[in-house]
Image (cartoon, rainbow, N blue to C red):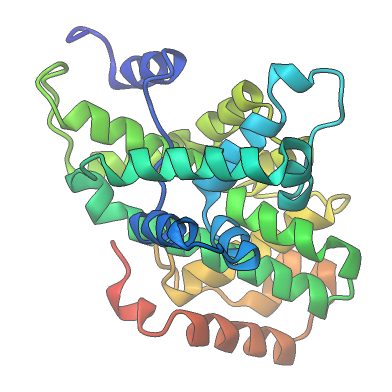
Length: 284
């Protein structure tokens, strides 16, 4: 292992299925607390699950497993719960949350997870807001999930890097600059690999593949919505990188979607209201 490149080690760990997608610790604890109630609030439970990319991916993985081969892939939280049945879906969610809470988070997850999770949340809320404002009512729910999933490869890579750095097996020291470089350069590839291995919904795969492309695919509304939400989040300081100089009305996505400066100003205010103070505190 020591003679292998870092990218080779990462790919081998993913291939061996040694990596668990990290669930936000606060969400995991809230899910467990909700399930512990004598009469769990189903709306509250699935609302919590719907906020976390990892929990949704795990639910979709189960609902689209080989047992259901030949059936159309579930593409929404409601479809996944319906296919599995409420009791089975609850069992899946409870098991992974309890396993996650019982495992030490690790220094890298502690340092970077919150920024990645908030960026996913910001893009999900932002893409949904933009879909409503731009008149794509039929895409509102899909826009939310597309925003939530677009950077799922970053969370997977963070978990891989945590595994590499947490023991003596690999003998590798990971600097902050190296961590961010790996996440930036490999997250699309690993996100697509996750979609393939876990049978995640195809409708969101193109968003994962194209959200960093310099050229906008004007045939895919979801890609445009998520790309614009992603730029708005980075301008607002949500995520690992901050780009305060982005002028949203001049972006190809804004022009394609036909959204004006006033609406985009409201969009930025919405993000700031949901995530106050992020411009000053976002991880570098």
